Length: 113
Image (cartoon, rainbow, N blue to C red; front, top):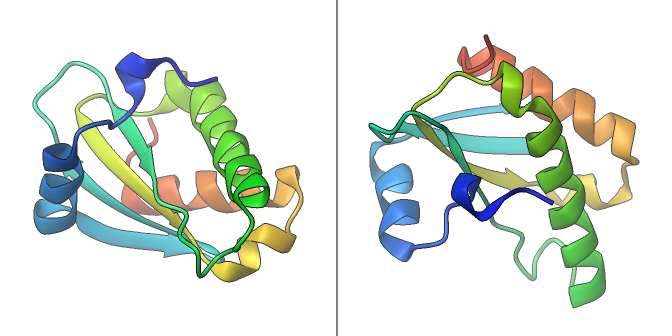
């Protein structure tokens, strides 16, 4: 599980990332990233009802994405707030496909070291 220190929890943090962040994505993952002025990066995951109606499936997808972010934390540059929006196709993908798409999106944005 991603430690709370590395999670976006407040609405104002999400809003700042929405407004000031830039978009990037890969296949079935879309992200917004904005500088946060901290010495670590934080992640937020938005998985709405359009992705999956069942809470169990939404939470599974959220947990998988959090685990990918946690394992990649050492290779992610410091000082970013990153909001992750999986597309509808993401729910049908396995963990390895999600991991490849998520890390490719971060590389494309220049957030990976």
